[in-house]
Amino acid sequence: MKYALVIFETDESRRRIQADRAAYRKEHEGWIGGLAAAGKLVGGEALDTERIAPATVRTTADGTSTVTDGPAHAGDETLGGWFIVEVADRAEALELAKSLPTPEPVEVRPILESA
Image (tube, rainbow, N blue to C red; front, top):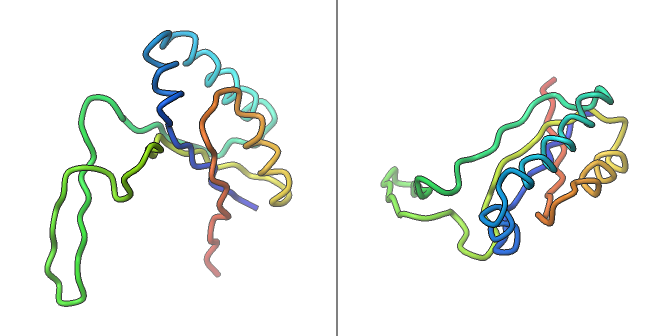
């Protein structure tokens, strides 16, 4: 089964990144390397959360679209990126998410597999 491990940056993790980007990156790269070495990593991407602010497009039923600067959901947590993992079941996906060595919340979602 494939699962998405969706990473959310927080005020705390942003402070840690700004304090020592190299050390923070090393923690993440070690975790990612472990997933890859175990044959669990399918892919993933980090989002640029510092240089260009996100924008949100909302389209109504009549086709009218509005664009606002900022994330779709305001709050302390910001979408930072995701990883796709191949695991036996949800329990294994949760264990991988719990092993992230940095303090970001990780949302675990099954990937919809088409028939």
